[in-house]
Each structure stands twice: as structure tokens, then as C-alpha cells.
Image (cartoon, rainbow, N blue to C red; front, top):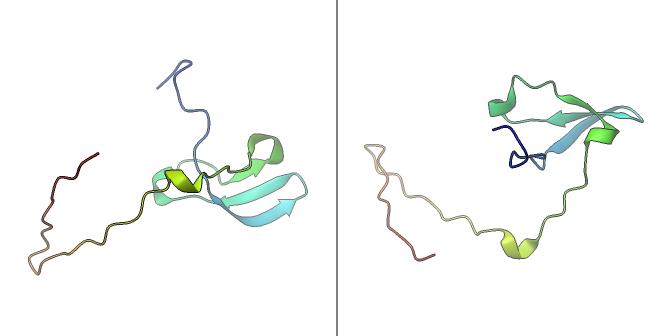
Length: 75
């Protein structure tokens, strides 16, 4: 997506290595393999995670035939 409604920042990602005082290597997921994993400090932001916005993980029960029963929940 382009324009002013496009995402400006994605993440947070773990810093895997400090290359220089101004360059860091990030541990990016496989979906971002086309992006170079080294970034200048100017491009990084501190992650401000609000604990009240984190949803609890629901354990999945996978059957032997690799199917999952999905139940609707209230929002």
C-alpha cells in the first residue's frame, strides 16, 4: 500500500547482532526474506508495547487428520 495510510513501521524484531555503533542486524521472520537484515540506528525505533493490548494465545487442538475445529468468539 502506498500513500499516507501505509504502514511506516513494522515489528518489533529482536536485535541479533550489533555490527557497529550505528548499525544493527535484526532477526527478521521468513516472510521478510527479501529485505536486508542490517539497519542504521536512524531507521530503528524503540518498541512501545502496551501490555493491555496483547491478546492471550489460545491453544489449538489439532486432530489426527490435521483438522482444527474453529469456534466463533465474541469481540
